Image (cartoon, rainbow, N blue to C red; front, side, top):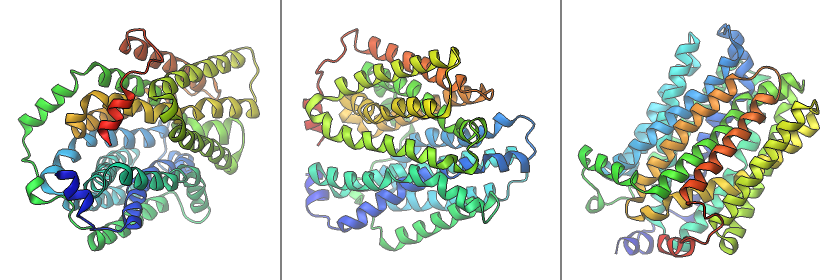
Length: 417
């Protein structure tokens, strides 16, 4: 009845309006992360950082706030409705972005970045909830697929866009750009977004009940296992994000053109996301993700060995790192789906727990890898080798040693859509 009411009868937004909502609500998250990367040297100089590696905390603070907040917005939007939650969060995001643009110290900038992450998390959570309110089944898959095709371009262009802005304005101008973008999105939502959750479907905001649901979620071995494995894997990714500017622009002396190399890498990662959507029906989530994880570890371990024997140059580094990171497209989405298999009855809470675990733990691991940067490629690549090994070990234990099985991919997926 709920699916029929939402998907079949509620034509409150056109197809392209819904796609635009999803693109903007997820795109502004990616912009908030990746546009900062070229500005890190200017921030370190302007705010007089004694330790250059600490500039990476500008990324880490955002990711930690983003991870924590995912536990909040699902229950809030289920109780208060989608529109007031996302609009209220965007207003707070604008305030947090203003704090960043006016930062008088590095500590105040980190506080603003943490608040940015906490507030903009609502856009991603609520955007997905709106899509689920208005669509289901193949129609929802179509909407999300179109949105993701557009969204995949954001990490490719965001660092270059940030670099172009730095030719015109100082680093604070990037935050003013994000502030204006968030304000425009808030105005569009205020005008075009209807309330998609009717009063009769809202749930009472109950702290005790939320805690009970969180405990229920953490009793599922598969969710906890793939969440922890995903946290290790994303730790390697976040380590790459934090140190990418230092490695490419400074160590390999690419200067401002480092964003081109980053764009190529991000574009290749986007391709494997698309390939995964075509292969997963045929081969299943376990085979693709577990095989890709083994490939990620093997490439990273081989790359580490080459660095240790002195074979390290820009082209070898980019080739092997891109090959490893391309496998992310076969790991990230499938780990998420596998974690959610046994918890369809509490999908909202489970999704929030998964996002929190992978986000916060992954950010901590990524920050640790990033802080080990010593003007060589070894900390990052060795760090990714270790996180890949740890992720594989957790998967092995989670599956009780039975890898590449069929599991319940087909049945659970069918139930979910």
